[in-house]
Image (tube, rainbow, N blue to C red):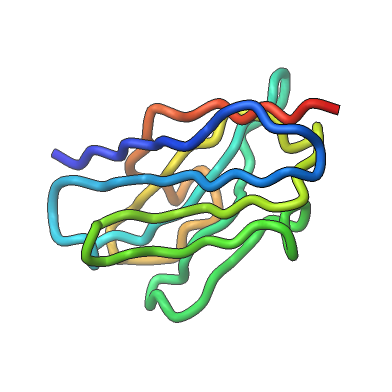
Length: 124
């Protein structure tokens, strides 16, 4: 059974930074393609960032490019999302996501496993 556990959310002021973490349990870490999605109040869940299937490339949603960075620590079986220059439009529940090593992870349909979500609130 795969489990994704996020941490690191919280309240931050505009212009501030946060780092989210997602620890995965289950099969070998390298078996999964990992990423992040978010859902703001009243809006659909949207793609934020992910690794390519090979792990050699990263993808970002247009609204976070240049501000957010996805990274991973294979030894800790953990994926991170460093979020800089935060603004109120980044307020959302952030979800860690994973799929088996069979394709990229960039749409909701790609996701095989979800974390429970962590709240990020950016005050103006």
